[in-house]
Length: 353
Figure 1 (cartoon, rainbow, N blue to C red):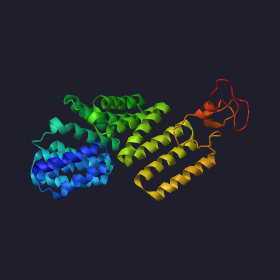
Figure 2 (cartoon, helix red, strand yellow):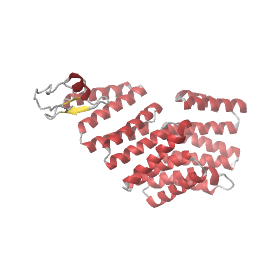
Figure 3 (cartoon, rainbow, N blue to C red):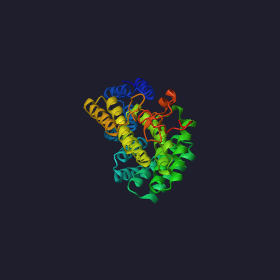
Figure 4 (cartoon, helix red, strand yellow):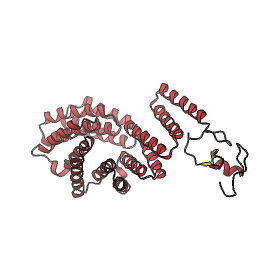
């Protein structure tokens, strides 16, 4: 496969990936990898595979391709290629929570002579190092690395890097319990996505929404937290990003626990798990969550007394009457009922619904 053909196939894969045809994109890139003997072409397609598997949350595969890429970089004997491959090794280990290895690879990047680390990749190296320090609870070092990455982003007008740093700073301030800043930085990331992110992966929007959801929950703004978490989960499901799906599920559980509606949190958990396993075609796990969902509905008697549908399966506005019975708000409004359909108590005041 010639250089021009290799470039065309890599571009074809990128177009498929950006249009959310992930598996087809991976197939195109894997064929290029199998047939291509040009080292530069192999290096580039390995970079695409590393990034794609990172965004899908397939971190072991990400590491596998990063290892192959560094072997290719050594064959090329090019300092810039070596720098990029070491950075991908650092990012892979960061995702796998191998934080000491991440820091070691980042230091290797910074120590490589004659590379473009100062101009183009220095911010990404600092960001990975900051995430690793944060994972090790070395907060001062983490903050120093994040601030350095932010300076790189500003000096090079790199909005994408700034977005990623802002999300990491949101996580940092959430851990040190400065919840106002924990919200400020993800909101800044969301603004960057809205302003510049037309050609970016939806992963950037999902990241900002998730970190906003965490901050809103910690501040007690549970409605906003739910909206942001649902948006992040929707994108995570589209991309098959299972780690982000898991984080969103935990956030949903925290939101419901903060509200005190533990039964609804279980329903939400089983409902979302059902969606995940259905998209993956895992029938045994799917059936288990469907059964458990309906068991929870029966145990908690969470049915609308008017339409008979279960409450908690879909996002619907509810109304709790003074007698404590719960109905869909739309059902009460559509039927114009002024007494509880369950206990027939005339406990509703005009205009209550």
